[in-house]
Length: 125
Image (cartoon, rainbow, N blue to C red; front, side):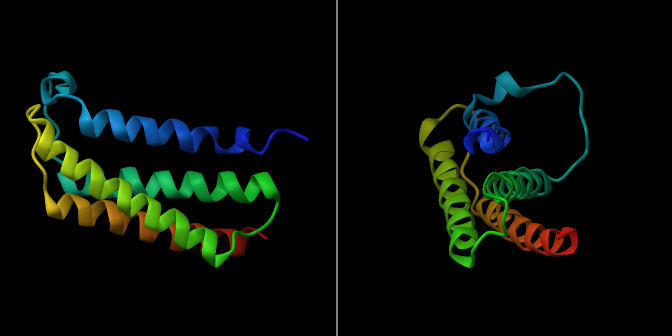
């Protein structure tokens, strides 16, 4: 049997991507072209994807549906990290600013990700 952490590796990598993309200086992230997309939607998608990866990585590692407690833990952890990242953006003064609405988008994306994962897992069983 593979080590259960191997299934969580994509979620761990995605978490580091979120931290880098949200805490790096703004000039380091300029792609050189412009895409018109809502900043809140980007935050929502980042955290939605993260908890989906966490959910399916954990459920696959243990070959069962996650408990409500574990799902709540993942959601609360994502919400706390999302809020902390927003506060750090304001404190670090690297061309970023803290935005309460970004924190709400992070939390909402995590919540919808957990709910969606649970529904898809029920369908796939």
